[in-house]
Length: 371
Image 1 (tube, rainbow, N blue to C red):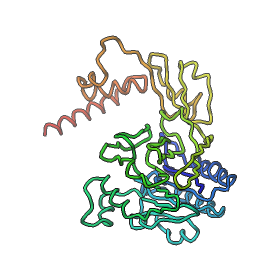
Image 2: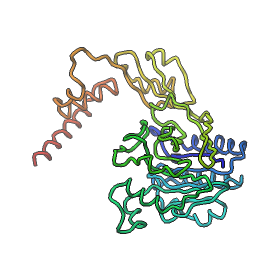
Image 3: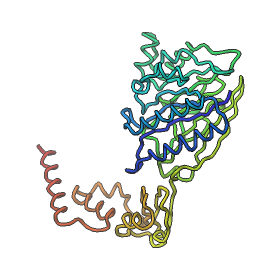
Image 4: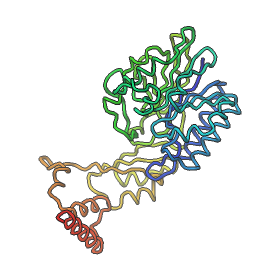
């Protein structure tokens, strides 16, 4: 059985104020659909976080609706689940109708108990679930820990003995006590939130979502990762599509790299050198190596060299024995701290009016604190 494994689309997301909707449209239509059409892919799995927020914009919802329509017109089936960023209630709107065109939206644990048979594989889809979701299915015997809840629920699933068993899941899974996070992760993943990969030994392949890096946390599971780079620590990564072939007892993943509409790139160098470079297309993060603060560096670089500048970092030398910045700030008043911050960012001191406003705010804060 062949399929494409996607996750963490985060439709509607903005990066440093820039809308990514055009980039996401390009990914879905010019990358995903074109590659699926070329390969005659029969099925797409989407492992949660379809949208970036629980109440997505009309623009994001229209984009996903158009994508589903196009997928259906190609005769491709879809199985998808909500992630922790999605509203399960919103996502399952019209799900019974969509099932007629073989778009399967599994949004509750009760629905997850019934597998979907496609070809020579049996698919199980478990949406992102919280304690009360498990209590609705497991009743008073619902365990206290997350791992035990999943173990109890998994025992209810009818695992096939003569077919490949594939699980679609949005969760933190690991064979150790940690997961590989990237800077685009928005929530801390503690050890109590990590599911041991040993829970899923009955499955031939576990199609995971939730973690934005693409990697296998265990021999039979794989994180497809998020399709677009949205943090500087992802700049040097090469994103790819994960096409999976699964049979009873084995699977193979073919990673197909793709070029995004706009990449996220890192530019490093001296300010004057960077001003002579030009990148009109991509999102750019800059690391200045001058060793001194450059006045209005961000505005000047954005105007002259990098219109889609998303971040700027100054590599400033630290004197031997210098007090760490966090410690030094403890001795500053609110007014001194803000004035120092403004000087660093803007390259100039506070104006008399701004200085007076900050002093008044500091006085009001002290008055409220002592009331």
